[in-house]
Length: 225
Image 1 (cartoon, one colour):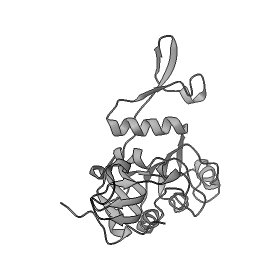
Image 2 (cartoon, helix red, strand yellow):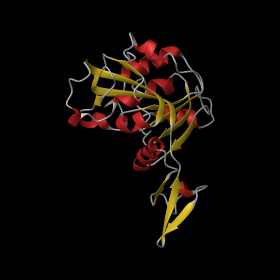
Image 3 (cartoon, one colour):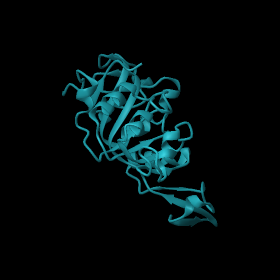
């Protein structure tokens, strides 16, 4: 069995290239893989598409990627705590103005689109957004007299996750709110990199309490806080 443990965060994110589509788990800093994000910032990549619940805050979490000008497109549900997003969305004289394409998705819809991507589904039907600007350009399907938006699945080239505990095969446990998006994103990316607060030997965790299977994980680092 291949050893998935990497010696450093830098080694773990080395396969990521310019233009990649990346999912990052967690909500704000809860459940976000901060060591992996820092290592990615050091890479200085460009033209990334970032799929995340939020945009972090300036200089913290995924906000570091936006601040570094590495993100070309952001797909998220909550960006209000990071003013750099608005600064980069619109043309102007500010640094990076007009460089970011931001697509806002209701949080439940975002989660279900990722779930659909991981399950190999063609999309989901949701009534959220029907009759609003969110429906523009989307197919509307009527079921038993009620209209729904067809929302397409989301997948990524890479997912960066943060587990509370992980074994050497990649089976993961998430405590509390660190469950946000991490288990979903594990299924919806071609290459999954997991950072964890604790690494244990394979077979030492109770299978009844594992939240995400190691079959999805390609690379592992420890040292996440």
